[in-house]
Amino acid sequence: MDLTPRQKTRIYVTSMYALAAVIALVVAFAADWERIGRNFFNTEIMADMFPDVILIGVRNTIIYTALSFGIGLIFALVLALMRLSTVVPFRAFAIGYIELFRGLPALITLIFIGFGIPLAFSWSIPGGTLGAGSMGLAIVAGAYMAETIRAGIEAVPKGQSEAARSLGMSKTRTMFTIILPQAFRIIIPPLTNELVLLIKDTSLFFVLGSTVDSKELTKFSRDFMNLTKNATPLTVAAILYLLITLPLTFLVRRLEKSAAKAR
Amino acid sequence: MTDSTHPLAYEGPAIAVRELHKRFDELEVLKGIDFHVDPGEVVCVIGPSGSGKSTLLRCINRLEESQAGQILIEGEDITHPDADVDKLRTRIGMVFQQFNLFPHLTVLRNLTIGPVGVLKQDKAAANAYAKEMLGRVGLADKVEAYPSHLSGGQQQRVAIARALCMQPDMMLFDEPTSALDPELIGEVLDVMRTLADEGMTMMIVTHEISFAHEVADRVVFMDGGVVVEEGPPSDVLDNPQTDRAKQFLRQLHEH
Ligand SMILES: Nc1ncnc2c1ncn2[C@@H]1O[C@H](COP(=O)(O)OP(=O)(O)OP(=O)(O)O)[C@@H](O)[C@H]1O
Ligand SMILES: [Mg+2]
Image 1 (cartoon, rainbow over the protein chains, first blue to last red):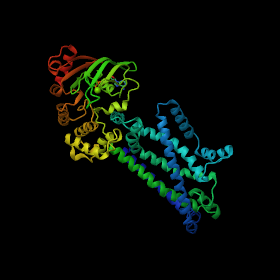
Image 2: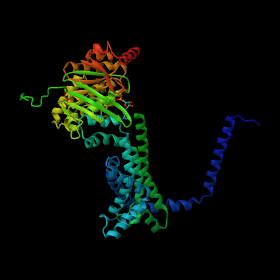
Image 3: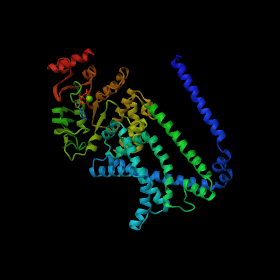
Image 4: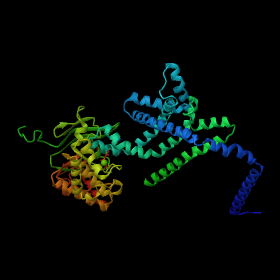
């Protein structure tokens, strides 16, 4: 029996739909819905979590993210400028820093800042979890964003700095008034991606310990899970994370599309 | 110096280039250029692609560093290591083939960023002067526009106005119409013609031979990193002496 390619495709697609339907039915009937509902979508536990999950968990996640991102961006800018500097020691330092902190797990850096430094010097970064954690994440994010900023600076056409210099602007003035404003416009999408990664990375703050009021979303939910012996708090945390990250991801996609159009 | 009203008045060429050598690594691009532009003079530089015209122009405001020879701007050697390059550049207006307007700034900000940021002019005065210059290039209505909303010809006219806002002593043009659609070339050449008529000192790299013929006081023909021929347009353009110039001009006419 000879089939045309078109018939073959149709048979293939139909059988795939059939298979998917069978799997869905089996899952629907075999799964213990009552148990799943009780353990993952328990409305009583959900109600118990509010409003603290927002007032403490989400709030702290946002504060930690904003602080890490803000400090990290400053680090990144300084590193990117050092990386592009003609002064060799600056460049070497920037390359070393960037490779070091991109190569290490963020958790190691956090533990080092949170416990290593206090052990060694009997001095810790002020601000407790907030200070040490934000500084640790900022150090790591700075390394990643430095490369992003450098790429942005290099993407600005050379004619821009030549035009600025030929107006008598100094190198520094040219960088800050002509190059960087254009570079940042170019790198808004990758920087937003970095922000999304950072939101998720604040869950690493758990290693630094926390007080009742300083828990971020993951720690808050995990403690609630241990308290209630139920997985519902994790579901809530997951949904809340997505409510923050998904709009940002969509925003990135739109920005990238409009940037592609502008080109 | 007896003239008390112009204590810095300088008698002599605006631009004087002596025995200038420039190499990019192994490639020697300028092989001992001697060249000058007198105050108020319009000099057009022509020559085949790769002959070093842009490089010479860019050396004059030190966008490129030369290795040997002198460049004197109003008598001051700017190749000297101690020369204040930023200050020098405020006196020399530069117009690029690709316009190089700042796309993130409005036309007005493009024009005032130099006067306000570098020359420390009062903002209101700089704005007023910028609007006046925009009027001169026929774009008074584009004050608040962004460069991307302008045609190529309009962008190049803004670029010329931007250079004028620095009130430069002289202007350098590197193929200012080469990136333009044919129908937009005229409006830019008109602005340059007016400037020339008003006595601006200009050095223009161009392939617009009829424009050079009309506007230039002197034409310089470059080839292979040296000045091959120079003189009034009626000599160099109509009656070239060297074979290289003859061949170059014949090829231009064929296009
Ligand atoms: N930054 C650079 N690095 C290396 N070589 C360069 C550089 N800029 C120019 N050159 C080379 O120097 C030579 C002269 O270039 P230049 O741009 O001055 O020529 P031109 O006369 O302006 O030509 P065109 O009419 O094409 O603009 C060319 O061979 C070019 O490849
Ligand atoms: Mg050129």
